[in-house]
Length: 278
Image (cartoon, rainbow, N blue to C red; front, side, top):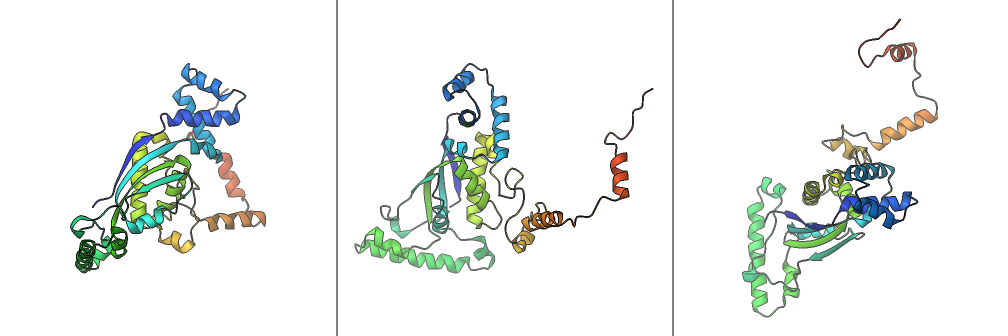
């Protein structure tokens, strides 16, 4: 079963909600007055967008909690769900129950990772799941309740979610789970969450990046070994390189500007020429 992520609903006007929240912090106007100015079209969408972008650059994040999104997520494994529910702040979950849902005929949907297929062991894994399915069906038929028969089911078993998440929490999820160090399934879900937001609210969606993205930290804070192994590791500097540069500056060890450097500065012409007057 393929992973599917669908944006079901969202804040009625996310940009306006964010603008009103930020303006409450940075204006002598009351929130009611700010709201009325938007209603009267004295404050337009472009002005709101520009103001929000500048506030996001400062790291002021609490207003982001006032914007929310609802998603349906299906076809993910229980291995994924055990990771997903560890995100507990600013997000609420409803998950398909294995207590109240009994798999008919013992046939449960499952996911086989590509690494298993490439190793040529997907057939063996499927055979094992077939045996689990048969035993599950026999136990249910013998009167074992689904809540106990589920003890047989593997992490590969598929499950479904309905979630509501605020934008700040969604940013944090993407910070961690779009990173190439994240488990592939979670990375896929995070990419699909981002894709859905990008279609609906591109101004906000562009901020859903791995933490090394240009709209987030802008550098990698994982280990240097992981940074070197990352396919975009050379695109973003590693934090240790920044710290080394800072330490060298603090100790006065940076290479001084020499005569050639000053000559280049003094003669640099971005326009490619000079204009003289007389």
